[in-house]
Image (tube, rainbow, N blue to C red; front, top):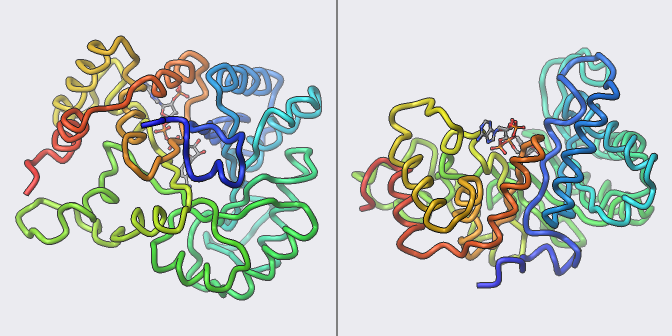
Length: 329
Ligand SMILES: NC(=O)c1ccc[n+]([C@@H]2O[C@H](COP(=O)([O-])OP(=O)(O)OC[C@H]3O[C@@H](n4cnc5c(N)ncnc54)[C@H](OP(=O)(O)O)[C@@H]3O)[C@@H](O)[C@H]2O)c1
């Protein structure tokens, strides 16, 4: 198994297998301006990511209320050659009170006007003339696929966005949206990890009432298969499970079996525990791209080890079963 190949490379050949999630950059989720310390922290995180071969950086308009994109933009303005070394992905569609002077309730907005306005805001904050990928952050109950298609077409024709994708969408929603589009969806970004097993459970345990499948898992049915069939890149957010299985101190006694197995595998292979977490995702034949949300340069570097481990079927299932907390049916 060649760990570096993945579907997105067909569209963006320089795309890396790991993605740096930028949600932690720029400071806190408030209206205080980013400081030079925040810029320096972002710089250190980006340098660590580049050092381990990461080229794809994941943003959203809302991250730290726009400051994540802005600090990244500050660094791009200071070192313009950096833009040629990175691929920029951002997302839009979530609105809430206080974000960009919004006064309304929390809501999703995939209207053409909002998608196009947010693309412009992201371009301005990032200080770039194009986004490599723009994702719809969450499905909008009021979305109209023809309208989304029109927005995508205008953004692509103007050269402002190269490719489009979605996040947190079911297979049926992707198929429905795709019928209206004039180009295939490039990405679906879902929460997937040893702490979020639903996409795996939906395919393996669906027909056994005794299997202990998590409530709601069946809503994920078919999404992994759909993405593989259509060549859509699956990206995993929350891929480190926020350190639940890798932090020095256990947070929940029930996590011990997974924590122990991860530590044992890391020791056996001479790799970091983060690498084992990510290698579990990367072993799936969908060639999942883990999005790592760390801003800590040492932890980002530790994630780079993931490319060194092709997990055996036995180890993959041992971790899956330990994380389920119950034997497979
Ligand atoms: N599409 C969506 O709806 C969606 C939703 C959420 C996030 N995302 C994207 O996915 C990325 C990752 O998501 P995420 O941040 O939720 O998940 P994550 O990568 O699982 O977790 C990252 C967080 O966990 C902490 N962490 C990781 N390992 C740790 C350890 N061993 N000890 C202590 N802390 C540890 C990190 O702290 P340090 O910084 O100190 O390492 C960071 O705060 C985000 O940056 C964003 O780009 C997308």
